Length: 207
Image 1 (cartoon, helix red, strand yellow):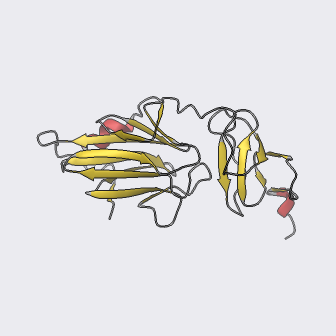
Image 2: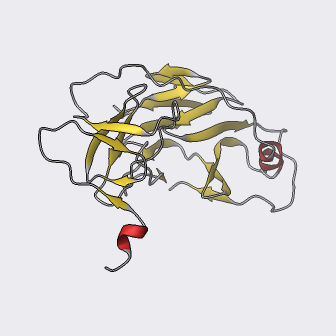
């Protein structure tokens, strides 16, 4: 284990204490809230405390993820439309609903099948983000006969559509969705919209 201290900072937090934990620390499993805005993250044992994706703060306190309210709600600020989104849309050929997003510096375009799609950190999620800002069960998306709705699945930090926190919302083409620190874009492709294009952007179907 020689040299480990050069790679990570390890801090032991004893029960009952509310010590400030800086970003980059291995603080153990549990819930933590940003000192600045109250944004919550749920860490697993080997997760480092991240910088706050809501305000950029780097100090967190251990906190229960139940029965507490944030000092300030996450804002779900709107982001600029990414340059790759038009290219992703042009690559689609089958009418239907899609979610397009960046994950690990790769663009993913996921086709939404009829019925329920689970979004979260759980291994059982159809769309999985292994990130402490995402709850195990974060959101549910329901697609039926062309209508697509998103529901907050009792997530820690909420679901935002076009900057507004929602419990349930019918999605429209071009809607921007914030799930933790991830930005997703809803594409609704209708008959006559699709134009065959190259394979510059990969797609994955949700089973």
